[in-house]
Image 1 (cartoon, rainbow, N blue to C red):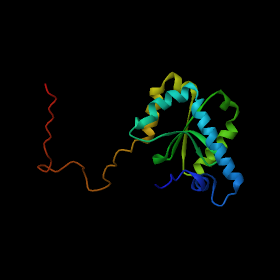
Image 2 (cartoon, rainbow, N blue to C red):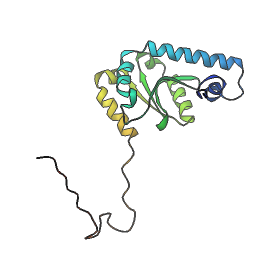
Image 3 (spheres, rainbow, N blue to C red):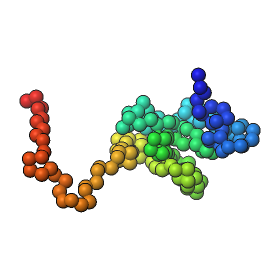
Image 4 (cartoon, rainbow, N blue to C red):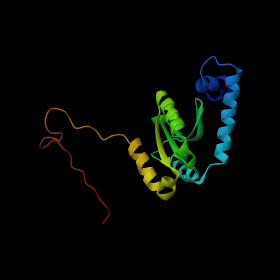
Amino acid sequence: MPLSPLRGEAAREMLCGPGEGDTVGHRHDNLIANARQLRIDSPLPERLLWSRLRNRQLLGLKFRRQYPIGPFITDFCCFEHRLIIEIDGASHEFSTEADEKRTQWLASQGYRVIRFSNDAVLENVDHVIGCLMSMLMPPPPSPPTSGGSSLPAKGEGSLLEINHGY
């Protein structure tokens, strides 16, 4: 049975870079242990949002919780859309410079980062989910750029009958 691509040396190279020494491997192992502990010690806003993201509840997308990417542990990550969701508590009020550097590094790796405050999640998790849905849903198709109307010509359309069971 093949090993998961996130185990051992392959994980170290993916998360920390190729050809790194034992120091980086040890750092990676610590990062994994820290991520596991963060999952156990999740604050209420993260647990609340996780209850709405887990098991592909949001648009059928897979989210990971407290997932290491490079030197950072992200709160939530959707690889399919390269989206990271961060829930910021009171401690983030004083670390805006560190948060900005983290966001810039993650953006340089191709991720979009969206941040919500603890209060936003606690006060209206449905609004947070709505914001995420609007970011993750595909845009509507563009209208044709030339050639006139996108409606079928007379006699070319089809009749669709909808029965609501009345």
